[in-house]
Amino acid sequence: MVRFFLYGSLAAIIGAQFFTAFPEATRNVFALLAFAAGFIVRPLGALVFGSLGDLVGRKYTFLMTIMIMGLSTFIVGLLPGYESWGVAAPVILTLLRMLQGLALGGEYGGAATYVAEHAPKNRRGYYTSWIQTTATLGLLLSLAIILMVQSYVNGAYDPVPQFANGAPLLGPDGQQVMLDPFRAWGWRVPFLVSIVLLLVSLYIRLQMEESPAFKKMKEEGATSKAPLREAFGQWKNIKIGLIALFGLTAGQAVVWYSGQFYALFFINNVVKVDSFTSNVLIAWALILGTFGFVFFGGLSDRIGRKPIILGGCLLAALTFFPVFHEITKTANPALANAQDNLAVVVTADPATCSFQFNPTGASKFTSSCDITKALLAKTSVNYVSEDAPAGTAATVRIGDVLIDAYDGTLTGPELAAARTAFEGEVNAALTAGGYPVVAADNTTVAKAEHFFDIFTGQKLKIIGLLFFLLIMVGMVYGPMAAALVELYPTRIRYSGMSLPYHIGNGWFGGFCPRRPSRSRRRRAISTPVFGMR
Image 1: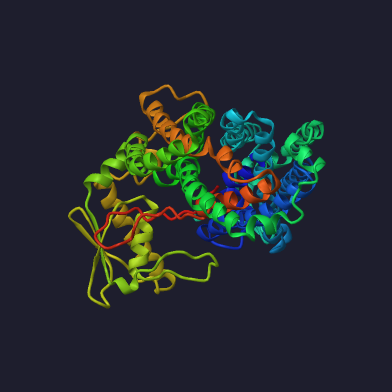
Image 2: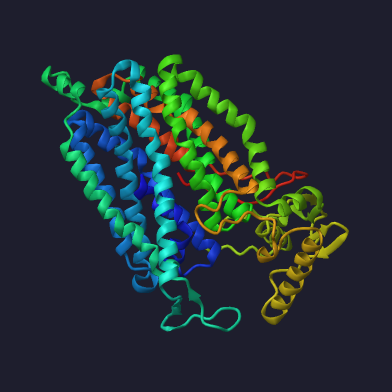
């Protein structure tokens, strides 16, 4: 899991290395799409390795998946960037991510099946819940490794000058762009160090014995000759798969990713807490919340899996909105106060307002409406949209200040002057209304100087709110492996449980867009993101 999450935690930095030819926003989307490639193929990995696990055994399938995962992760650390290999670099990166996804598609089902078949029947929830901790611990360990490497590399090495096509890359101020060493090359270190984890994992797995339930089944000649056909070709088993997908894994996946990955994205990108502090706060919440998986897994052995999983989903549905709102108020009081008290209204012809998603970099959002909303979203401004007559240029009212937007189809100095004037007026009005437009001037936002700098009321409250999210994650995820294992007979267990799990977690969870409604008259922060799960 550490290997799979390293990419997600470093997606923005990797995007700058492998999608250099595109503007920043577009390359970030491409970096996330490369991350998503791992989710796309997870169900295929579940079919391939699930079938092998039911045919030849759990142990040997384990060895194959860990080798594929470990080597593909290590190679990412060696892969040259776009400047060296051109378009081949992002293509190979995406293929490596797909290999990781294939391997992960076989990892989980094998681990859950192997442990469940060793555990006493009345303790399956407790024993398999330790597997459930590995996803959260993988995220925690990936963050810890990144924080340690980042601190060391940036402290020990000088910034790296940047070049484009052999010439110095200049910034808006005319000076050569300099990258801190972690962003320039240090991000590769965690991927390269992962080879050590691979060797340790291989040693441990070589010492393991085959599952007693599988050995007994094989001795009796009761193994399935076509586990995929048996698991997904008979209605009685298809029905179980649909129950597993829609009744268990789909809802669990949304809660899991929203409570961990999206919480990290939200604090950093929406609430505008710096990345180091965001990682520190999430890391502490993960440390405190991991016990919940084991607690609720053990509790499910006594009161059942269903009430705990459904209770977690219901609690999440009732509390997610107020909890995330409270996180905003606590982590960045100035931003929350401005969002609640400053009226911002965008009036525009709705026909000129686009859904601003540009994965290819070919679309240009030049209408006055798009320009206005993009600028507001960049500063996490809450606004209300109102319709204007057809052909009317967009305006934005910030408090009592009315500002006309410019037409993005202008060119040359005229465009630059219009952009500078518009952004200056908007930012000045937002600043006057209380928005912390200049991050360096915001003294209310949470900030950690080092990993143990958490002992203030503000930071402890944020960690407490994040811990509450982790409790709900533990409720839905802790008993999950046992619940899935118990749905299927031994002969098709690996195949049967793997597919619904990876469709639920890889697709329902991984691709669930977290974006508030854009409907008219609704207050919204228009920050789209695909969950990294």
